[in-house]
Length: 468
Ligand SMILES: Cc1ncc(COP(=O)(O)O)c(C=O)c1O
Image (cartoon, rainbow, N blue to C red; front, side, top):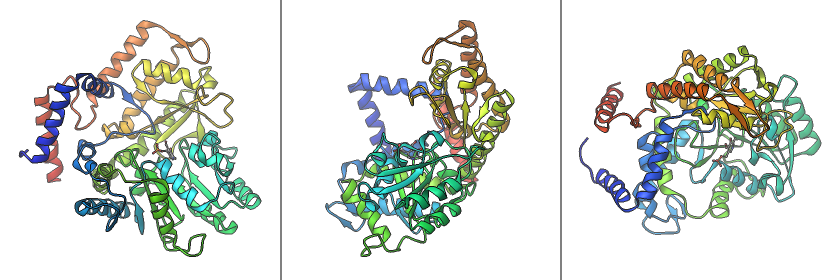
């Protein structure tokens, strides 16, 4: 690649860090090695492309730019405005939205902006309960959403699918001002049309938090809520494979009247993000969002999303075959939620034992869970990172076998600790090491690979992408 001023700047930054702060450099290097050597099956994460990563380290970080493109409270925003507008246009294109705000620092803030802009403290919202697969920010007592508002929770029916009849009943009974549909540990498809019908009947606003399924939505593999709901929120670091951050988007209702009757709904969101919730935006993160949102419209992104879905479906089938209770009886998106307590293991012990074998999943509460959030009765597995590495449905039995090998060879001592035969553990660790070497993270040189080899492979893969 040709030498450019930005490339020199990045190289200089790395060299300076290496020479001047070996402690921090060493820790960053250690984390890089860890990521390259574990089988990550975390539903809530993904891996960013190095071109996204580098946008996060770029010069927009030096600019303070309160306000929005064309209407800032600081000078020096001529170029920044173009970058933010590019991110807005790309977010709108990706989700077929009429309006997008790209400044939220996270999906949590995006949700809080919507809630706090519409509701006064003490008013009612209706969201999915945590144990049923909802998120903390949808009304849990542990978050602002459940502390400042009168949060009512809906759950799952006897088949462990969203109980729309209960949503309807609760909505009629409590007359919420806001209904939230969106999940963090639910393997099913959401019926946004049905939610909207309920919201309209009780005069509620509707928020879809698609943080977990944003990529499937973009690829047309999950219904797009944008025109069915008033507000759509998402983070950018799970299925968009972008930087840590959030988006708030709106479809055909974007210019409907706001609750105060004076402004339009999108104006409420704009003011809700800035100045109500945030000050200056994180502009290098917005540049990284723009980069990630450009990549999601490429054919290879859709192929990855198809793999994500096929992988999760197969993984769920494998665990069911092995006798596990899989919540909802399968997976229609990217994640699989497994009841491990019915095998005598808590979620915490399962998570620890798997991590000790270099397999990363997370403990998760399941419907009717009697264990605390730190212990839990389940685990949640996701396929975002497996699919990125090119692992397809036929590779999933191998992943399920590995997880099962760990879980069926541990002896839990209590809710938090376990024992495992050292020889079995060593054999699993060596299988995982072999898989990590066979399926490296694309464009991240594996630590066992020389940088020169990586440069050749990387350039070859970039040429292949350019000519496709
Ligand atoms: C549905 C949902 N909403 C919001 C969040 C919070 O996202 P963030 O970490 O960007 O605040 C999560 C995180 O996992 C989530 O699953």
